[in-house]
Length: 240
Image (cartoon, rainbow, N blue to C red; front, top):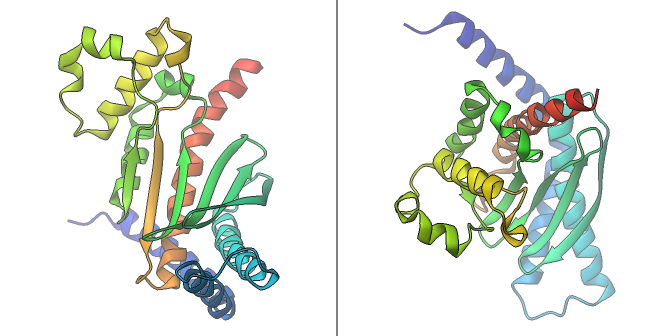
């Protein structure tokens, strides 16, 4: 039997998303045009240093900025945001969306396969205080198509050789996160101590329509923000 409270909550979320889409739908064509034009130029042999191509880059960034603004509007966060910075990598621009309240970054950009939203968990020293609800929320991100978790800072060879059985399996994301966290905490070698336990990214393919990308981005961004907010709140309480 379906929980009527859960059904009502889902309906409320859908209504809020649909209203946001309806409100901003007139912008969607210009967003798509800006992104598609950048893809077209980046796939050609045209040099990226001309004034015309610079304007194409800016139009693409403006489109990503709109997606960020919709996500922030949907979340209705009691926060202040800075999203005036970006950089251009090999596949396209990446917009940096910064929460000034929590000092956490979220990134909306373009890669070879499409548009992505990514973030890292901040204040990782507070992971030990998180309850099961936190980990459930993190696992909800895996339900989005195109989700991946990447470790890009690894445990020292010394520790891998000391505990080889702990590195024979990599199937569970939660296991890999906690493994990285615990080894970072106990590592006496400063060069291998890190506050990062990896990057979480959702990528939407170029074939997916913008409306559904925006809906997914709004939902995923909110979950990402809630995770970092919980970690930040512990540090805020400690300072008090």
